[in-house]
Every structure is written in C-alpha cells, then in structure tokens.
Length: 249
Ligand code: 4FN
Image (cartoon, rainbow, N blue to C red; front, side, top):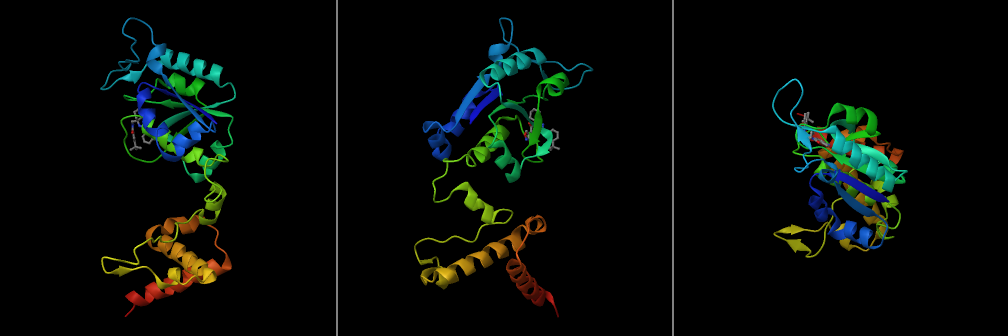
C-alpha cells in the first residue's frame, strides 16, 4: 500500500514511520509513506499556503491553488489512489473502515491546518471525508497517522502469522480478555489460577468470559452492535443477573 500525505508539516510523519510495526512494514516494502509538503506547491517568494477568510472573521484558510497542485502531483504518482480528507465533519473512522481502506490501491491523505481548506477543494478534489473522533485538533496530521496505523495492520503480512489481523475478527466488536504475565504475585495481587493450570479448554472458557465481562462493564455500547452466539449471550446474561443481585434489596 502506498500512502501519500499532503501536509505543511511533513516531518511529523517521521514519528509514525520510525517505530515498531509500521517501521517494519515500511522496511519490508509492504507500505510506503510519502509526505508531500504543500508549501512546495505554493507560488511566490514566501510560498504562502494560507490566506484571510472572505467575509471576515478570525483565523486563516488554506489557499486552494497549492492544495490543488499538490493533489494533482500526488495523483500523478498514485493514479489509482483515493483522495481522503481528514476532517471533523467526516464519516466516523472505525475498524470496518480500516479493513476496507486496506484493500485500496493507494491512499492520498489531505491534512488541514488553520481553520481548514477552501470549500472548493472539498467539492472537487476530495473522494472521502473521514473523522477520527469528536474533539478539536490543531491539524489533520495526527488523524492521518491514526488512520495509516489502523489501515496498515490490516495489510497482509504486516502482522506476524501469530497475531494476524484475521484473528482480530474473533475479538471484533468487543474488548479483549484481561492479560497477565510474570510475576505470579504483584503487589499482593495474584494471576487467576486457571491461567497457570495448563488446561487449554478452561483457559479458552475463562478468556471468553473475561472478554465479555470487560465489554459489558466498560464498553456496553459495543455489545449492542456485536452479534453474540447463544453461548456468549448466556455468559452475558449470567453476569447481568449477578450485577442485578448486587444492587437489589
Ligand atoms: N480538525 C469540532 C468542530 C469544529 C472544528 C473542529 C476542529 C484541524 C483544520 C479542522 C478534528 C477532529 C477529528 C481530522 C472540531 C480531524 C479534525 C478529526 C481536524 C485544523 C480544520 C481541524 C465538533 C469535532 C469538536 C480543526 C468538533 N479527524 N477543527 O478540530 O482536522 O480528522
């Protein structure tokens, strides 16, 4: 997968490409991350990328000409790519979208700064608008990094066979079970006995129960969307009855 990112702060993407799984994905050639400085497509001695808003008001707007030139250049490099704007008005980016984007031929991300882009760029040069969540950011760059990170781990070969992205489909739409490692006792707290038993059936059962309980307690909204098997429903019901018993009088 080839990612191209249009930004006025290309150096920010060194942080993404320089570490861990993303770094290895770059080194193995499974992905490339090419930041393009929008300023390189700006005219004049000062290479200005922003201007004052028509109609007045505070803040600055990203000028359309440098953005259009940068997008055209990126499309020349990646003719089959989708052009995606990171924007608070975009469709909510989720795991389903991460999987779908992983199947794209290429992705060109446009990162806003200041108050955002001239609207005419959004209308004519942008295929998708996506948002990583409802909070105010100072720019689209961190959002683009979140999306590149989540998309990359769905690309075949990026994760080891051990924790392949397909394995996520099990934990899909729910939280993971609680994890433990050595030592057996830490600050007066013990690892659940069953995890030391070597009984793999019992461990699998415990982990399923743990995952469902974590989700029920901490992210019940996820249970509404996820499709549970009859067995899983039984486990959730059992815990609901137990939790009810704690507050009944
Ligand atoms: N943000 C809100 C309402 C109005 C403005 C903002 C805001 C960066 C260029 C956009 C924000 C959030 C999620 C990109 C936010 C995202 C951005 C994102 C983003 C500078 C203009 C701006 C109601 C959501 C709080 C600044 C709400 N996902 N404007 O943040 O780019 O991708």
